[in-house]
Structure formats: C-alpha cells, structure tokens
Image (cartoon, rainbow, N blue to C red; front, side, top):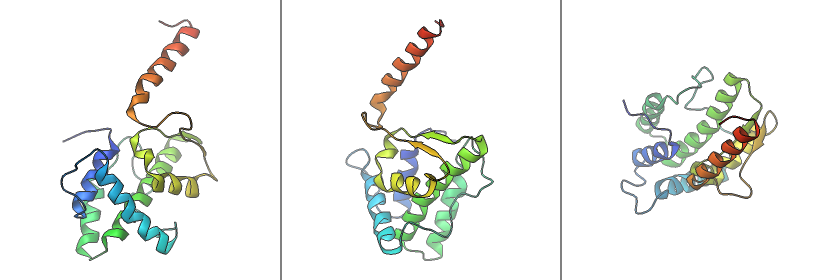
Length: 165
C-alpha cells in the first residue's frame, strides 16, 4: 500500500476522478482547478454542507483514502455533479481537521504545507472551526516546503536553548 504525507496527491487523484485533469503541466494545477470548481459550487450554495466523506469516528493517525475514493466514485455513480463532489471534498478536508483535533484533544492548530495556499480550504477552516479552535496560518512566510529548513532551524535553536544537542 502506498503511503504519503502529501495531501496534494489526494487533490490530484480527486481531480483525475472528476475528469478535471489527467496530466499536470505545472505543480498544483489539478488542485487549483479542483478548488475553482468547488468555489463555483460554494458561491451558489454558501459554505454549509450537509455531509462529509469523513465520519466523526475516523482515525486521527491516517486519512482513510480508500473510503474517500470509494465514496467519491459512489457519488459519481449517483450522477452527482463534479462541482458538488469538489465542494464536498473540500468540506470533508475541513471536517477531517476537526476530527483529528478533537481526537487529539487539542484546541490550537497550526496549518502549514502547500495545500494551505488553497484559499477555499482556508476559508472553510476559518468559517467552520474558528469558534472552537485557535487557528494559526502563515503570515510572513509561505506555507510551502521551503519552510521545512526554517522549521528545522527553529527546532535546533529551541534544542540549543534547552541545553540539548
């Protein structure tokens, strides 16, 4: 079984299932088109959604991608529109953040990684989670991978100040 920590690959898979894009010409192209499709749906229907691809009992240590893809395929077989599925997918990722935070019993959440360049996902998170959680997003640095080295530097400085290493 394939394991990855990249949510971007999940966006790529969903975009392929919805027939949006099979081969990208640049990094993030499929995710951007998926976001545009979902944004169209939310502009017409508002930021509320009646269901999610993830249930409250989901495990916090892994994203159940098999059930995600199976449920998306089931929605396609039910003739749900691509913009509906794209919106439900984005909404579901927001719900997954809530599930993980609740299972870990945390109230402060920091968001990082290229997926958080997705304005719709960030808007959904802020809209639905800001009442119950203390949310932190990048303000001075981008959320991309170039900040891995910055995080490593901060960890090193913390370790040095604590007399470790």
